[in-house]
Image 1: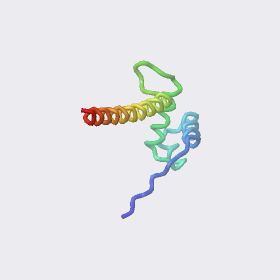
Image 2 (image 1 turned 90 degrees about the vertical axis):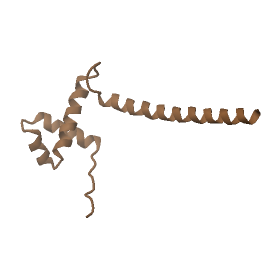
Image 3 (image 1 turned 180 degrees about the vertical axis):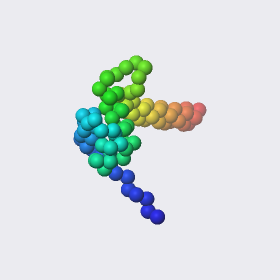
Length: 99
């Protein structure tokens, strides 16, 4: 049985849905049904929007900007470790070769 293709949403679509949810007096579940969105996804988007609105905090959850920066730094860290490991192997190879 083929798997159902996962739907993707643009940043704009997410923002619109969150705004509707925050302005409405309806529960998130009802707004999600009205917009034909997964309820849990809408809950996550609303929660993240509230975190972003509150701004960065020392002990709180990460804002979207902080999450993006963390992803970028982790990727950069991974690349630097690979470069370091390569240089270590190259140095060992050339040290062995010169002996």
